[in-house]
Image (cartoon, rainbow, N blue to C red; front, side, top):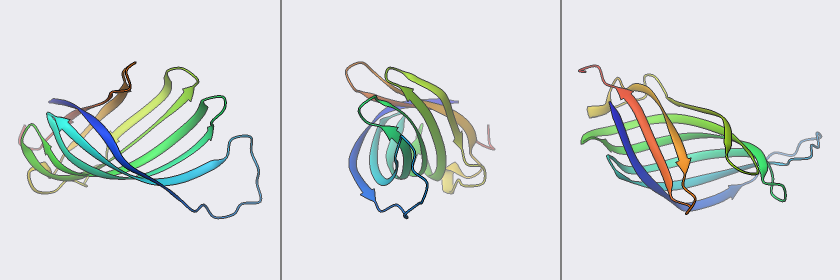
Length: 136
């Protein structure tokens, strides 16, 4: 099945990063985020976000692990999903998105799948899950 929707980030809180003796041109940062989803994907997520990013050039890569609570097409429960991408100033490259196997609960127990995040020119953030449940 495919479920899509939009999301907004309601909180982005930088977290301390342990000191490293290695210096690169793109500093590494860590943050936590809270998101809300609407559409066929309805719910919220807590996110652990890390990135190596050059703010001035708009170039870098992020990795995120999300804990989702809500519903896909009305099937309610929780699960984790992970995603990453590289930005090259414009657009995204090297995208990765996966539902974490074995992480689903309640009506989303046994969920597996992939997905994608896209950002419209107007800044609207979209999410898509291509998923399977054991009963399908």
